[in-house]
Image (cartoon, rainbow, N blue to C red):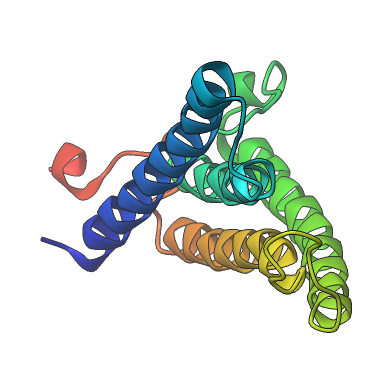
Length: 164
């Protein structure tokens, strides 16, 4: 198995664990409240934290597979040099947005190290770290996509097997 595939499967396993944790927290809390008139105090806070990580990890997978939300009405019709120019312009804008995301997330992590959640008493940096990890992973994927483009494996171009 390639390292990229192993990483993808690892992220998918983490997604499954986050989803399972959310289901257990919310459904378990509903059952406890309905049948015994009580509940888990940490349920809401933990499920919210797991949801943040679920969204961030899902965004990494979607970005890596080029399945993220995109508007390509114009760029899908371009060919040759103009398509490459717009691809690189898009990458530049994405890189700028990721810079601001990473910078802001890092600030939130630093602030969150000294702040604690009210119920679970975990550092708030744990939640902010989700967007930091997402931004760093997306930046690395963006660099890898740019590297592939420089090597001639641009999106929509022929692969080695198709050229021969």
